[in-house]
Image (cartoon, rainbow, N blue to C red):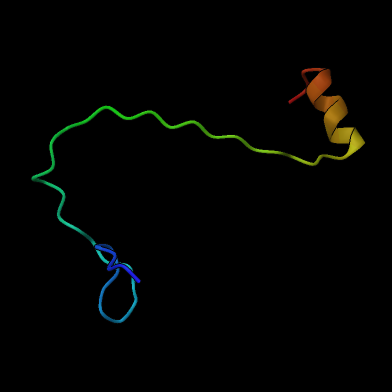
Length: 49
């Protein structure tokens, strides 16, 4: 298994110094699927939320 920079020797997450990293522009795209009941869907359709 490769060594992860954000995991310490005990397997716990740890802070990593990123102050020397250059500023970059990044874009993230996310997608989700929601399963809603009929009543909640009705509120969305009727702009009631």
